[in-house]
Amino acid sequence: MNSIEEMLIKYKRPQTSNHRHAWARPGSSIADVQKAVEGTVAHHSMLRTMAMYFNSKISLRMTIRPSAKWFSKCIHIVDLIKTAEDSNLNTCIYNDPKLDFTVFPELMFCFLITQI
Image: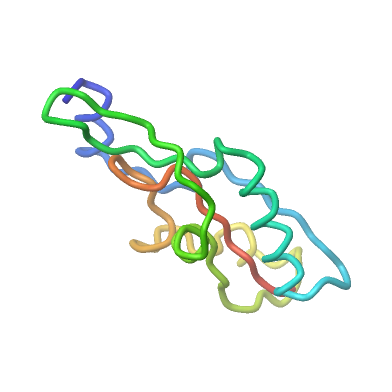
């Protein structure tokens, strides 16, 4: 394990502190948005990466094939948010131990879908 891996294991950071984007799709259903995200993820391999150990000294970044199982791990539908200006949009699932942490070894990208 190298020093970066040790830091990521010791100091788990919320994913939202690393990088976060939000898009609004007026008139689209959650199913439509999920289908669009799945299509995007299927065509961009960087969005399907996972960090894992090969052995005690070597770590790898793996690209996973798109599948229903992979989508179920990286795409999450979260509770309704009242308005786009609502402070809940900025902190949606922030510090959630299951949905908001991307640490080594684990998924490198996560997608959240909500209705506004």
